[in-house]
Length: 114
Length: 113
Image (cartoon, rainbow over all chains, first blue to last red; front, side):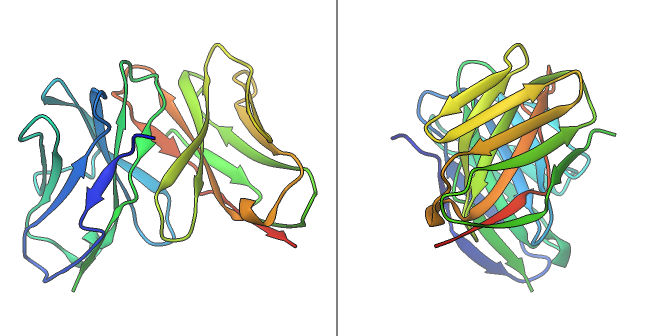
């Protein structure tokens, strides 16, 4: 069964450093997303991406964050100048032909900022 | 503000019991609603998707219902098994908000052998 894959599974970074989280969405999907889950809290929407541009973003997704689809298969989330409060599980997700389709999530990248 | 509330926060049942997990949402303009399963430290596994025009969806021992007018969804699990132990999350999508899902905090289910 096709799945969303994410790397790395766990990353520890120093405060102030830049982090890139990588995702390979399901191959025929057109909508891509990043969500995050701080330990013990709800899953929160960060950004959605369609047709090579951001279609929706939350108030969390400020200038510290950026997304990119550098080629036909990868989708990345870049976090600049990481802060302690950026420590969370980051989930990549994708969905098919319409935003009303089932959204499939990856296993997550656990980011720890120290 | 769009909110999703799940009750109960935690549930422990003996194996074989039928159970119902509840989800309520504040915005009637939902586009669809998804139920997910999350194992500790793992990703989200999609269980069922209900479009706003539908009343329920079934997959194996799982049945999810949607009542937009009352702002409620339920997930029914029949003949529960220890392998069903996980956190169950509901999330709804507002039409034309680019796939933004709004999640509840989840119900942590423990099924005892």
